[in-house]
Every structure is written in C-alpha cells, then in structure tokens.
Length: 196
Image 1 (cartoon, rainbow, N blue to C red):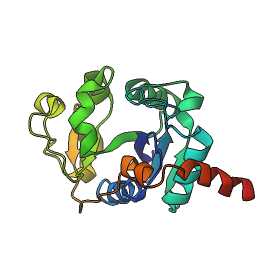
Image 2 (cartoon, one colour; image 1 turned 90 degrees about the vertical axis):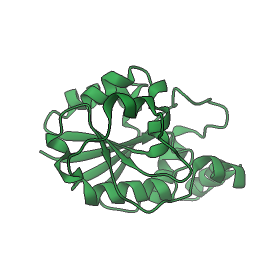
Image 3 (cartoon, rainbow, N blue to C red; image 1 turned 135 degrees about the vertical axis):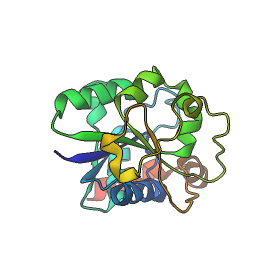
Image 4 (cartoon, one colour; image 1 turned 60 degrees about the horizontal axis):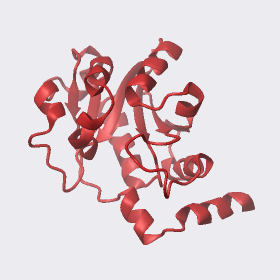
C-alpha cells in the first residue's frame, strides 16, 4: 500500500511553492509519492486566461523535477470536476493506496466554498502548509473540523475529518503574481514545447 499525497489545482502556471509543498509533504507525511492533479478547469476560477491543459501539464513537469512527484491530467480521465468526486474516484480506482490531500493554507481559508466540502473532509485527510499573508482565524473548515492533534506522519490513523498542520518556511510565489509578471507565459511555454 502506497502513501500518496494529492496536490490538485489549475497550475496556471506551476511554480516553486507547488514543489515546496510537495517536498514538505513527502518528508513530514512520509509519503511514497505526490501526485499533481492538473485540473481541466477549477470550478471556482474563470476559464478566461486559463492556459490549455497540455501546456499547464508540461510546465508542471518542468517545475516538479523530482522522481517522486508525478504530474498528471488524471482528473480529465476520471471525468471529475470537484475535489470530493475526484477523491471518491481515486479511492475506487486505486483501493490499494492511502491518500492525503495537500494544500496551502490559502485553500483552507476558502474550503467552505468547495462543493460538499464537509463530505470531502470526511473522505480524505487534508495536510496544510502555511502560505504568507493568510489568516485562518474564523475559517469555517477549521471551526468544523479543527486541527488534528496527531503527528503528521501518523495521518493514515487519524480519524476523519482530519486537518493536519505541516511546518514549513513561507514561500511567496503565486500563480496570479506570475501571470501578472509574464502574461505570455503559456504562449512562451507552448513555443518551447513546439521546439522539442
């Protein structure tokens, strides 16, 4: 049975903080692998400015650079759009694995906006890496589920719902800031792919 961390998102574009979250999780959660699930379209985000899935997957692979970080467009294959459905599909397809969802603290602050977020937290533990400028005071998800008192490495035995705090230095990168600094990143990434 493999211990798998899931990092889902638009990855529009992937950046160093995604890799950092994955490395922290591999270490503190004692994971075998981290799977980056590059979403066809995040239900909470507009399709405007969203790079094509293939370009985002290629950029994510270039950023991941680690033998235990696997980049995939698996959500498109599963036909899922919401995290709660993705987790259910993953558990059906890979019953031999234990899954933990990985996120920056900015995700926890908005988790209550996710479709059936309580069902999501009842299905999979959520491991959280701190992000700069994010306060979780008053977070509906934390009010409902609270922090798990267990050690991060014991996440497979944590009763659900479980929100697990990981310790990490803060990484300021964000996809929004990268797009603002380089609005043509996807076009440039596509040209690089065409040359290969």
